[in-house]
Length: 483
Image 1 (cartoon, one colour):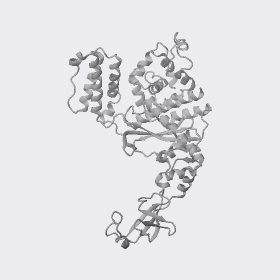
Image 2: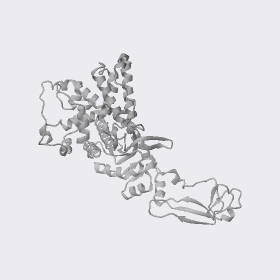
Image 3: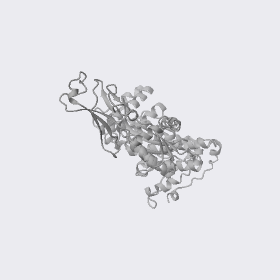
Image 4: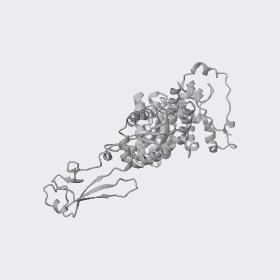
């Protein structure tokens, strides 16, 4: 077993933790709350147990990634902080005097050990079970929404990204000592990516070995970001940026380039399911999977709260078939009948026909469209084309030479009719007021845990980032509710 490979470090300084790391320290509380031995079980197949030297404890490696997310630091900076911060060493199960890992080990751990794992579902499931065990998760409602994350490599070429980071590093150096400008490596001037990478490597080497200012905080930050881009993501750079990211739309006139994370959250603000997709995916299409994942994680779902995107006909039918109340308003086009040119066509209730603004009444009507395929049928009204030809308002309404003129109105399906009645109820309106909670959770992910921008390239990297961020916010929420 993996844990048999681990070496216990006995230290005369362990008692320092009782003095320096208080009982209410968040990391101490997480250590006491979570049994991290599940990491051994999940990763056992990723290690060779009878050959080679002992591996670094996978729990420690996993905890490093969790700390990165909690404190929003680079690999290098979180390892450096763990060198002197005793609360981090305590959390990592290290002796106070024990040496830290090499930051490059985290890259290997992500790429080799966490590859092909359903880490997102597994970690969410662990926190949901924990919340149920602690009698925190009691509600039977989930709130659903999607949050967007911009690609790390935005709509720039990989070379532009490296140039930008190199420029920021040089600017920080010149602010400290402009005299080193003449000693700096010669900048790359061609469009060959390999040459730009080579220049960045020379720049990093110069700063670390010759400039004498590599440890100055204002220089260290840009230096570490450039190093991480070159060392950790050089493979992604060679395949021209982020191949998985897509353009998505936040509104009619606002777009982003990256990914979406579709979330389900209980009313206690525990995330119960998540699906990471490319940026262009439709929110409503993920609803049924979010419900099933929430159930699989251990959540009982009787009510779903969401915005208009989740009220499509298939979702209404699914919710009804599974005994779930869908608190999501219908699209206004449906509630208003899906009519166009309302000011030009008025309904005569006595005749049961529409009349155009010239006073011309339809001569017959017919139901059009197919049944049973998730689309609404239409009521189509037919006007006498010969009469249309003679009326003064025919321009823009009647096409010259056309043999017929029609006007169609979308019909409400049985599902939509029931949903319209439900959304007028007091229960619907009260539950709909809970939706703001998930907006606050999206903000927490983005502004406290770096979820506004991807930390690596590709959908797999985005899923790993989502898994660690959601695991962190769920643990913090559980601690708060227990307190």
